Length: 303
Image 1 (cartoon, rainbow, N blue to C red):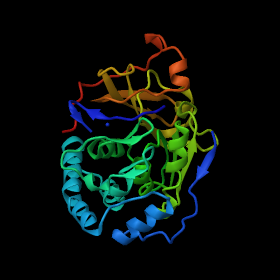
Image 2: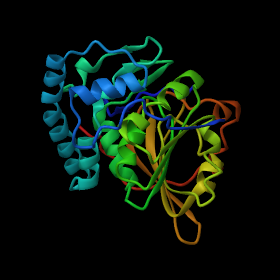
Image 3: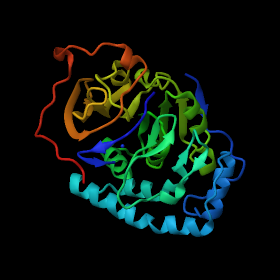
Image 4: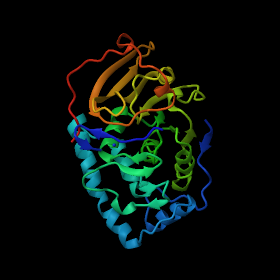
């Protein structure tokens, strides 16, 4: 399974098509999110919650601090924070994604924690920390014209953020019970440009015949899956963690494809993800000569 945990430096930050199901209630407006719309969205997904209105207000009160942290991290590492990335993190209600799918238990009270960390959401998966997610989002350079693919849906938060920026957002989850449940959460939020699928992300989404402008992988690969490179458009960009399973010597790699179809790569920040499984674990690691060349200075890690 693509269990997800993301760590930047020493800081913890970790098949069948399932279109969004019809909501049982009207989708809440993007800027009208509140306690009542939270309850309505949870009910539409058949997810129990005991969060009170008072607790909801406390959680939302921490939100501005988390957004300020995200902006600071992005400015520190990119020189400036992409306003579209900030807007997306502002719009997507993170408390809605604090849910353990295996235990059928919401834990929204801890959302927007001051020191970001990954949270278990059942079935061996995790809601990654918001600093790492913001960093990877800006690293992918999403635009309003992008068609995006995520490998490893997890909680659905990362693809939700991307969906607020891009034209079309696709996401693949290999863990079937998690994929079935998370596929239900987007319609009640009004995120109608998201499509999810249960399957092995190694093979990508070949039915998207035009390919993808950006691909984000959220599990560590030992080598780059050839189908993902093939599905990257000329001018496209893929961000993928690479390294040995359960080893700390993992790094994000950024792959780009020029207009002539030639692939370029560079090493980015140090990370830690649990491994990509499925086809990836069944295949042998390519010889060193087959690995893409990387260059540049040793990267620093987001703080």
